[in-house]
Amino acid sequence: MNSILATSIEFANLGIKLNNVGKSISIFGVDIAYYGMIIATGMILGIIVTCAEAKRTGQNPELYLDYLLWMMIPAIIGARMYYVIFSWDYYKNNPAEIINTRHGGMGIVGGVMAAVLVLLIFARVRKQKAALMLDTMTMSLLVGQIMGRWGNFFNREAFGGFTDGLFAMQIPVEYFEQCGRVGELAQAGLLEHLVNVQAGGQGVACIQVHPTFLYEGLWNCLVLLCIFFYRKRKKFDGELLCIYLMGYGAGRFFIEGLRVDQLQIGHTGIAVTQVVCVLMLVGGLTAMILGHRRAADKDKSRQT
Image 1 (cartoon, rainbow, N blue to C red):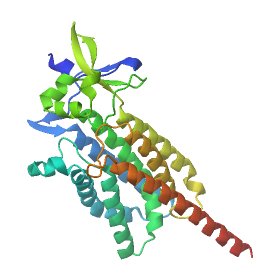
Image 2: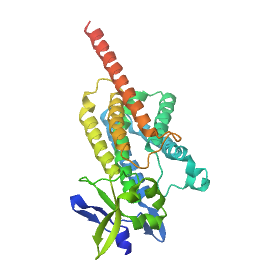
Image 3: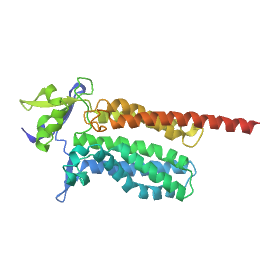
Image 4: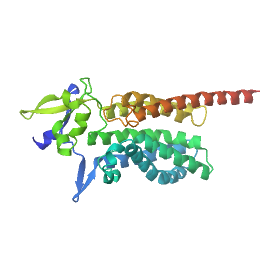
């Protein structure tokens, strides 16, 4: 098969076809993965958003620059550990692959957990309000997540099962054969639902799947807009974090149900990320209710 056809990605029902979508770019003979470039770009944009929000709320942006320097490496390690732990059946037989992130394999939930833990420690040491810092970081977190999902696009990962819906994404099976990943398709049952696409005068066997990276990116954009327009009306420190926990948790729960590469708790068939999402939703809602009650009590005490 022509290499351009093998690396094409098509959204047939939208009339969009992208040819020669590679995974990396070569600079002076060194291959640099788009995944890493996108993650780095997401971090830079996150820093810009955080500093702008810190200035708006009368905080010192340098405080957050210090935090980000301490947070980046633990967040990357946390994201990788989360993925490796819940994919241990593979990594226990391929230990050398544990530190190989060039092909993806980062669990955003693990990265967020590590980042929050570092923030709590950092805020305590620097005598800052952790809730206020978390609010300030919320939008930048979403920006990073939105960007990160496009890394999944270039890696052809984190997609869902077969669909014939409007956003159905077609990827040639040949691509996965070249990468040695056909087993993933077979395990997910996607080889049973192949579609034959005419390209370059020949038939090309493709999987046709939910682009869950796109769903999550669009959903996160919606959550980001909600927080952006509400942030000046917040009633207590930590409220923006609550909105994030509820919004992201609810959306990710349903999107995770579409994915064929779910990280599961042992062999229970239970998706660990869906469990985490339920905890996020319940925790965010509980904290929101308690926060509003406390804010209302403070208003009453001031009036009296």
